[in-house]
Image (cartoon, rainbow, N blue to C red; front, side):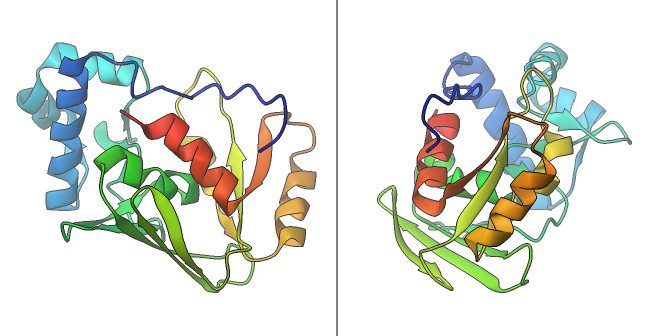
Length: 201
């Protein structure tokens, strides 16, 4: 991982109150089950308006242009091309490659990631067991781009957080963001370590 990197989102989900953690997972479970965004009115019915307001204010969840809750990091109500299958059989889309790597820590269970290389479109499959990466295809030499968007919601940056089969392609993306000091790329293992730092709860 980049030396001296101040990781703004480390511990983000662990820091919220137990009441908000319960509210967060109530919405996550709803989206996983229905595969749909939650209308804000329905979300308020499920967890209460105050809890919903606080989750939105803290950027724990975000609403789409229709004012429905669609971003519930790491879970996405929309198909993004990144998906995770948990050991209990549930499968869902995630917001980005990085968030996929955070699912083992979020749900405290083994999981499989199904995604793609942003440049080659080669299928990426990663198995995580006992909080360790056990296998990765097409190889363990996968790279992950990450944009540390500080003090804002993250929906707008998920599109640049992807898996890359080749280091050159990840570095090419980094050059496009050379003006942004919060754009990084990591090896797969370093990205997994960072994802655990963010999503542990």
